[in-house]
Length: 191
Image (cartoon, rainbow, N blue to C red; front, side):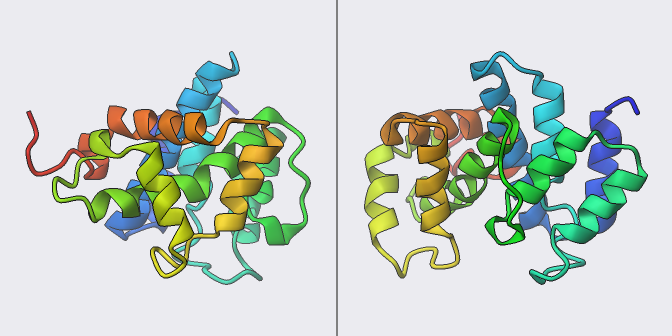
């Protein structure tokens, strides 16, 4: 099958009606495209993987169904095994080992993207470009802040890729800044 971003977007929209989940998908896509460039890989492949990693979540939100149902659907559509493996590996509870850089990158950005969204939302400007790694680190220590975000996954993702924490935080902030308008993180004082 030929990977096509428009087809991936259409599939996401077919299964995901919630704007916040679509924005999360776009944020993870942007972070994955940036990770692909960092590791001299295919930004289209990595971006589509990021875009589709949770496409089944709204319809199949339980650990018994997500991401299993989505991967079944993608398999029938002819998506490559490396995409399927990365999507399975982004959910720690599946037990699927993350072997590829793409799979490890998806795991390293998924929860962090959601957390940076939350950090941005509490800023007076609501602009991701103003979020600093130290703010992310400080909020991570507050267990009640964005409590649904799995902090252990963020730490483990950074460790698996042997990244420096502040650099990785800034890297993902920068990736989100590049798509800030489309994900609602441009802020109230857009220039």
